Image (cartoon, rainbow, N blue to C red; front, top):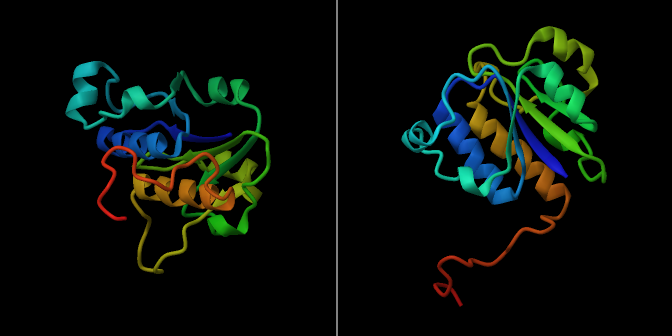
Length: 165
């Protein structure tokens, strides 16, 4: 199974966008504290996280809590990576976790150093520092789904069918 992991997310709207992507791809979402927002109902609605009920979300106290409970292969998205997402093979049957860093500082460099061979970078113009974390999550999760031939995903509109025949 494929998982999305947000390391200390700070902006609720980004987390809401990633929740929507996770709902569309049927991917569990893991949130590593501290969070820059509240997960109560009122704050979720205000941040546009109306997909909360469609996503399996687990919250962890810190990186060690997450790491101790989630064996598998971890991939870290970072501007310091040297390989694009399609350079990796995401078709393995094992648990795969894509870790996305906090908006202000990303993933701690010490953690990236420990996993250098699994650091992913989205290729972009040399003058661009980075993409928004929710865009990065969508790109990386889509690549994983593409490699898996979109297994279990629908190619048909089911909510509002019938426009194109």
